[in-house]
Image (cartoon, rainbow, N blue to C red; front, side, top):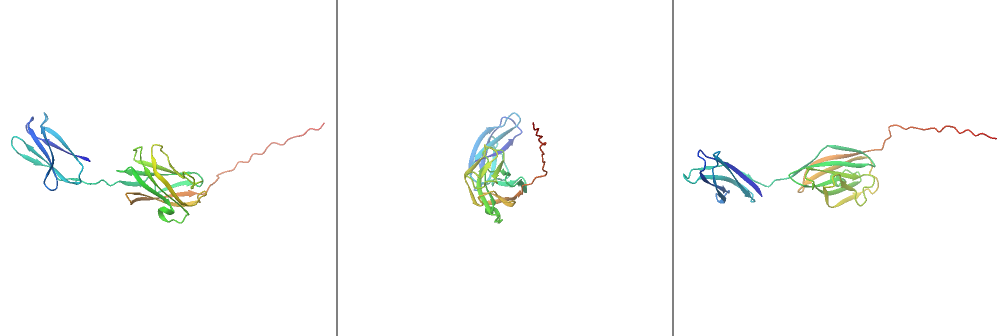
Length: 219
């Protein structure tokens, strides 16, 4: 349900007035009698659970003078999702992370790799995430070293959760270096795409230590 609100003003305080919630069929869906306050105004609110177009009509009970609001449309809110980055980069063999942002929804489906975009990289994963923490985002972690273990994916925030099980296809050993498509959908509708880029392991420098020579003294 959702609250539909309106403010009623009058030139005279203490006046009794009736506010009516009118639906698209011009029927009174709800009503309330109230009194104009000392500041010559009063707020009214109706709890609405039916999707429809409404107006609120206020009537002065002494004079029957009425005023009516503009149309108020109560419609279903559609959740959306997006990624915080267009490309997430991590070295092959490490724990890779990517973050999904959620608006007007707590759940979303995330697909990676072959399942996401038929990228041909040889690995796919699909999971449903739930923003139980309520902070508007979920960070997914992928074990690139062992993507086929019992928990190939986890969430960085322990207050969030994965709904059901993670479905994986393809590679069972460490993931190859390359790009893996990611997408996120809400209610079966794709909302956004991104890329996980796994780079080859690298070493910037090597340091070689040489042991000091050992001298042997003979008797």
